[in-house]
Length: 356
Image (cartoon, rainbow, N blue to C red):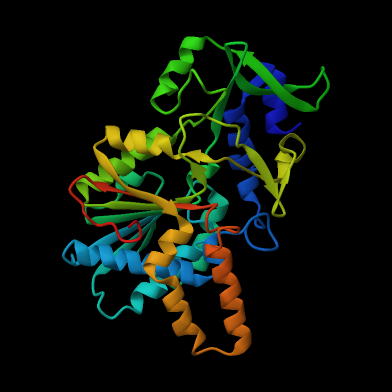
């Protein structure tokens, strides 16, 4: 019996967020213990894996912000959920090639998976000034640029749905007394849903999804932005709407699969309602610089111009590969409009590169 089955056997049913947390993050059983998650041979692929030019655009954005804040001698770069460490590796390499950038920087990496930390340490073994932290509040006081690529979409979520004006929490239980798991609706007090009215129209919504630890993270990010003259740049898939929807899905070998059948061996993800981030940051007096498609952001940072420069120096095969990679990053039918860029900063910050 695996840990999920043991828990259901003991409690009869468990909430969806607890099911996801064990399925993804359990030290022995969890999905993120798997070494073959990322890449074309894995279950999903991220933008830095498609082309290092994605990370290069972020490097330009980082250096531009450094210039905007009058070129401090020291800065921090904090990445949330660094995956294999590829993006930060590419960023470090790109920044070091920018001759006008002469600040010293400390890299902080925040990763929950012990297995991925080992992968990151191996991949980043040639770099200095890299610190892994469990608590993001433990960074030093230098100016801090916070990055997150596909971070929040991996949070365990609570899911609620309405039937005949009654609210139920989505849970997991055994099916008809056997050991196959199934969804189980647990009726809850309708008043318990009111706390989500800050993010959703609970009267018109039939579904509500809420990542339970997101407010803790956003509060910590807010403190860093305020104390460290910081800024936060993130990329993820999601939507802005007061009407909630069912977005949870399981991904295996780049395809959507049946969550309840494949939960032992698949990624579990959901679309973030960006209203949640905007609302919590606003409460903390942090401004949203903008929400734009990944296509818009990368084009504003000059990805096409940079590609032209590279292509002129490369052979035909390399050039063709780069064109195909950039197409995947910016094409509206690929990742260009499926992913969004969001940035948050202090109220008095006027830096908006990539968002206008």
